[in-house]
Length: 207
Image 1 (tube, helix red, strand yellow):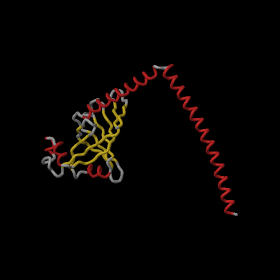
Image 2 (image 1 turned 90 degrees about the horizontal axis):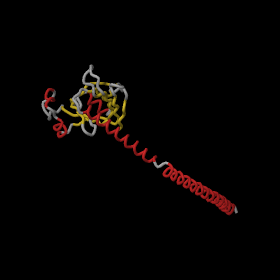
Image 3 (image 1 turned 45 degrees about the vertical axis):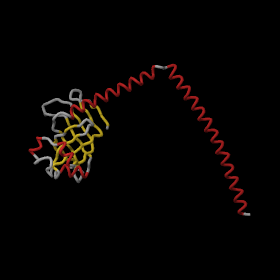
Image 4 (image 1 turned 90 degrees about the vertical axis):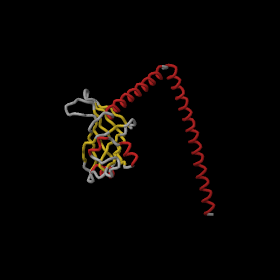
């Protein structure tokens, strides 16, 4: 008897909830249909009453693309000129540490510079690859646009990479491209701030 009552009660409980569920589905379907009609009407109004809207959006998109291309071109000009840049890394106890490096920029915004493999910067980069660089100022007396670069660094020790990057001026520090203490540091930026020396305005590039 108790089992029969349990089954009957369960069936009634499930049946009532199925009814509620079906009613809810119908209500949701009616609401969705209303939303579709409203959206269709709004789209019709936009296309008929305001045909210029699409033109404005296209022009704004093209202008934004042109501005970004112009910013990237200006960043590349700074990356590719001879310079001494400041590189900040993090010490083992979380303190910032800054030194000068001589980076060379690539077309994909990658920065590379030579380093001693046993240097403090290499040790710090291997522990924490997050770095910050300031590039573009060639003299304290000059008024030049400059870059603040946030990126992730890695140490390159492959023979091919070291030989392809080798430059004659490195002979002052290394015996040659096969010097065991010669390595490269590669920085991949993910955020670059372009700072104007005239207006002090900042433009941001995100990688």
